[in-house]
Image: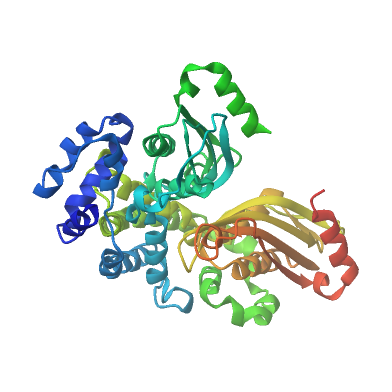
Length: 256
Length: 239
């Protein structure tokens, strides 16, 4: 039933759904209570406002772009890149640059492919009942994102830990969750929070800890130009926030 | 005359290797030209800055189109001034087009009776892949064998900056740096090695995180004499 509702969403203005998702991308941190999000984002399409507003449903409404959307917007993005090349003083007709607008447009769509994917698809029902109540950590997940302020890459590593509460998640799904949220125009603080909240909503664990350590090209290649600087952000939810010993264990294990 | 050669090279360097190396009229008149050109140069620079400013609106509009094409909401708080910031960032990352070797060397060429290898290594380099407009970055090691003339050390790094802050291909970048030093100093030999990580390979496409591309350009005695080349490579190998 959810599938048919999603199909009804697609032909409607992609702008409307774009603003839904980007209010998510911009305000996710504040709206862990889903009722708020549904109210903010679903002004336009009537059928969506009748969606159940339980916590589990919130991240099912995230899809904005489809493959068709990508194909349709490719020419305008490529034309924009041609303008940029000319504006920088380069000659777009020289051999090395002839197909660059198309390659750059496709690359940029790849770097923001997180907008095309939904958590529900990616989890693939890989949630299992397991009587395990010790910490599970997946660390050193390589992450690549785009700075939303300068459109320049951010890259680094993500360390995720969670304390299951009778349900565990397939390990690669943690990395896939990272991919969905990092392949967007991001701010590192928001990325960290979105990953933590997504895991919380999927599993309802006793606690989640996410640490992101990244290098921002906008600081390294331009501006202050500090080559070796790294930015570290973390989100601790549930028992990781309340119990310092759990947090300590997590932080020690990701350091080793 | 020097300006044209430098800016032509970005597209056509591959075809011009041998002739450029032998052509020495660029810098032998440097000291005379310098005095005459001082005033002219100031005007040149300020015109380039004004040019940059005048092109900004078009770049901004292009970036707004891109953001909208990607499905983003350009009115949300985080993206409000992103087109302007991205346009300025892109202009900064391609500022090498405005600069010439002339400006940057600043007469820092000295007569010194030194005929041993001079190496400046681990120069951080950041450039943009001309095929995907995505950064690549790494380290440059430069070595040269002076022939009566040495150059200020930071000028080697500045030459790297001029050529790297452009839309580049790593092979061409290496060659341009080597050629510029040859033309400026007429040394007995020049060697340039670049080791870089290409985000177009790491962030997309094949997605090989740890891959590095190494290119080198050996001119003059570094090309002919294997022992000199070996000495340079041994000295630039990181411990």
